[in-house]
Each structure stands twice: as structure tokens, then as C-alpha cells.
Image (cartoon, rainbow over all chains, first blue to last red):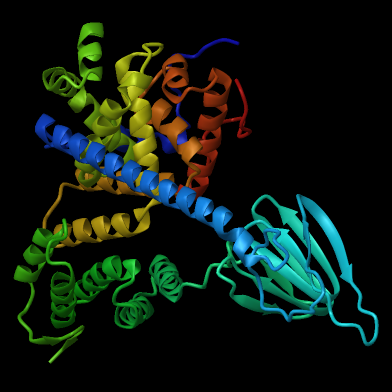
Amino acid sequence: MSERDDVQVDPALARFVEAARTQAIAGTCVTAESVQAGLEHSRRRSHSQRTMWLSAAIAIAASVVVVALLSPLWSQDGEGERPGPERGTDAPERQRVSLGEGSHQVEVTREPGEPAVPLYIELPGRTLELVEGRASIEVSGDEVAVRLHTGVAAWIAVDGRRTQIEVEQVSLDELAPEPAPDPAAELAREADRLLAAGEREQAIETLHRLVEQHPHASQSRAAILDLARLLATLEREREARCAYELYLERWPDSSVSAEVRAQLARLRPAKCSGLAPR
Amino acid sequence: MRELIDRARRHDPAAQRALFEMHKDRLAAQIQRMTGSPAAVDDLVQEVFIAAFRNLEGFRGESSLPTWLYRIGLNQSRKWWDSDRRRRRREQLAGERSNNHATATPHEDLELREHHEQLYDALGSLPAKLREAFVARAIEGMSLQEASEALSLPISTVSYRTRRAEELLCAALGVESGRSNGKAGDR
């Protein structure tokens, strides 16, 4: 393979690449002292984290020893037994299985008139209690999906909390929950789309909603500046002023606060209540 | 240099300071070209040197120190692109455009700035691996060999990723590729 030392950029990108190559380099104000201070801080934080983990490990080891020593006192017939859900003195013996990677079909049947004997299925991070019925279980690493086809089942968390599983609903391991929809992100995307389409008035409305309905969202911060810029462009100076002032009220120490103040100096005075001029 | 590095490994502040002063300006320029953001440079330069001095035992001299620092810079820049990049970019652009609102700017400078901003917006939409290959080759102007060392990749992979990045950038920037063969691949 021949090695090319000259970089031949796609001609269509040449002017963009030229702009990147010739950008004025701002340099850095970082000093050796600040690096060394940061290094020292980082070492101290690592040391305290190690100490914390070591303490936690010692505490866990100690509690395991205590449980092991005390467990004979818990068992009625002298054998060690893990505490679990409450049961009567003549309840049938609990059955447990562990499932590994792969797909599994599990069924628990009950004879008419006989008491239920739940099956406890040990899965990554929690236990599935199948009282009766049929379930499909998929195990992949730390993730588990359970479909209860018939019967009664529940998740049992490490702290004993029970969560009933509905029949014929796929129940996913709570360790990997579905992310909740983010309305602020949706509004930000909508505003971007409207701006790109040149729909400035609608973009202004959408940015308004984002800023007012989600004042603490990360998208709100850039949205206020976008809004102010748009309003200033449309010569709605009093509204632009209110947006800039709201930005400074919320983020007085931001890296662009000086520029925002410079913009304010150019705009017509106004008294504001949030985004609205009074 | 080897002695300086050995002393820095032993946490000698004077050696660390010397290494910092020798490499900070070059690293700062590289980070600015990786991110397109002068505002990000200080934080990232500091993070890179802190990481470098913490992990100096891991530097075995198989590559040069500037190349090693470049790789750490890539990692930090990748985190910068991943976390809050959208918010920072919009905020920075909104602030910069607002600042230009009442200022007369030479048209050529304005066009260069627009191209710069458009390119880095488009770079932000690329997968990190493609972006890094393109920045190393097209913006830093590294040879294939240099880019291969800096990115710890085979030369053929650098070539492929650069071509692929160009395709995606042309699409993102809405320009038609000027290459006669638009297919990506080793050449």
C-alpha cells in the first residue's frame, strides 16, 4: 500500500477546512500552578474514594460474618436459612432455582386443593417469585425480560419490596428502565427545526414555551439566548432586553455574561416581568 | 527529555512545570482545532495535563510525548463533544452572533467564521471516530503515518475513516462531493 503524505481534502469541503485551519488560536491561560493544584485535588479525591470503598468492604465483610455466626439461631431445625417472605409454620418448603444466560420456559403447577408452592427464580440483581403459571424468561448479561403467560408472579427486590407482574406483559429488569421522554428536549428540537426552516415567529413561540415551562432544563439556557437574538433581529428590542435580563438573572456568572451585558447596553430600556416587558 | 519525564513521574513539580510549558501551546492549538471552541481550550488543556501527570507511569516511550498528549486530548475532547455539546455550542453561537449584530465585520472574515461554525456543527454530528480521523488528517494536516500513530490505528483505517467522514460532512453541509469516485475505501 502506498502511503500518501499530502492531504487531499474533498474539493467541496476545501473552504470549510481552510476556515478551520486558519482559525485564530486563542492560546491558553492555564498555568502550571493550576494544573498542579488540580492534580493534588484529584489525588485527594481518589484517596478519599479508596478509603470509602475500603470502609464499605470492611462493613460488608463484618456483616457477612455476623450473619454467618447468628444464622443457626434463626433456623428452627438448626440449618442456616435466608430470611424471606413471611410464611406459616406448616407452609411447604420454598423452592429456588438460578437461571443463567439464555431463554427459559418455566411452569409451576398446583394441584387443586393443595397450597401454592412458589418457585423463587434467582436472576441478576433480583428474584422472581412464580406462585403458579407459566413464564418465559430471557437472561442476557445483567438484563432480564420476563413474560408471564398465565398465573401469578412478582419481582422481589433485594430489600424485600414486591412488584406484581401482569399477565402477558413483558416485564423488564428495572435496572435498565426505559428513558422517560424529555419534553424540554422535544421543544428544543422543534425550535431548531423551525429556525432552520426560517419560521422565526413560530420559533419564538416555541422558545418561549421552552423557557417558561422548563426553566431549569439545560436546553433552556441556550434557548433564552436564541430567543433574545431572534427578537433583536426583528427589532422587538424590549422583549429582547427581557430575555437577556432573564438570562443574567438565572446565570449571572456564565462565560458569555459580559457579551450579554454588552448586548443589553445596545437595546432600548424596558421593565420586565420574566420574558414580558411591563 | 527522558530524565525530565522520569522526574515528573516521581511527582517533581519543577519537571512537571517544564513539561507543561514545553507542550501547552501546541496542545492548546490542537484542542481548539479538535473542538472549534476557544472557550473549551482552557478547561480541556488543564484536564489533559492532570490526566497525563496522573498516568505518567503508563507512558512507556513507544510514541513521542506530544503524540501521547494528543491521544489524551482526543479522549477529553470526545467527552466535551458528548456532554452538553449542544447546549454549549448553541449558547456560544448565540452569544457570538449576538455580539456581531451591531458590528461591521469584513465580509471575508465573516464568511470564514460562518464556514468555521458550519464545519464544527457538522463535525459534532459525526461519530467520534470519524471526526477524530478527519480532524487529524484534514485540519491538523497530519500525514497518514502521523495520524496512524496519533490515533493508534492502522493506516488503512485512518484513510477509510477520513473518506467516510468527508462523505458525511458533504451531506451535512449540503455540498456535493467533488471527488470523481464518491465511494469510501482504502486508496
